Structures are given as C-alpha cells and as structure tokens.
Image (cartoon, rainbow, N blue to C red; front, side, top):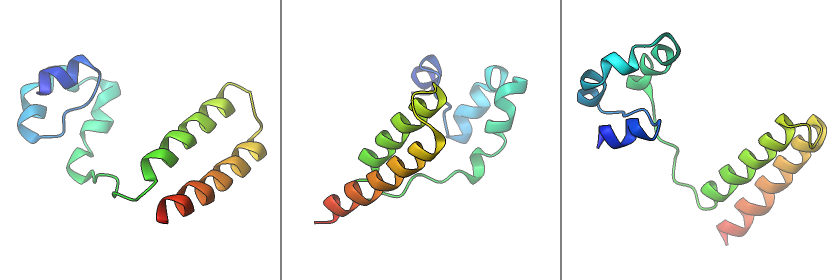
Length: 90
C-alpha cells in the first residue's frame, strides 16, 4: 500500500512504511513532515466536516489566486462553516 501512496505523492504513515521508503522520504523538503508523523492525529469525524473542508480549500485557493480578498475569504469561510455544520447537525 505504501508504494501506491508514494506513487500518488501521499506520505505513508506507518512506521514500517516510513522505514521502507526512507531514501525517498529523507529529502530536505519532506524531512520536516516525516519528523512529525509520530505526533500526527487524524481529523475528527464531524458531520459536515468533509464538506466544510472542501469548501474551505476552494475559498483558500480563490484567495491565493487573487479571485477574492482576505476579508471576503474570511467572511465566506465563516458563513460556510455555520451553514454546512448546522445543516449537517440536523
């Protein structure tokens, strides 16, 4: 499985996989990520959480590409959080 993850650019999280791929994961860029994997925790499962994560990602991308201002991004993220999470809680 770690070979598949690595081929897709995803860091494997199992210690044995990290060891097996240490030559590829030991680059200066990845070393910072790999060094904290032992402390990594999964996102909690929250109704609407995935939908909100995707919405937030789109908002951040729009901000990054200059399609919206920081103020607009903040307002959109807050409105989306309220709307999506309240709807999911019903």
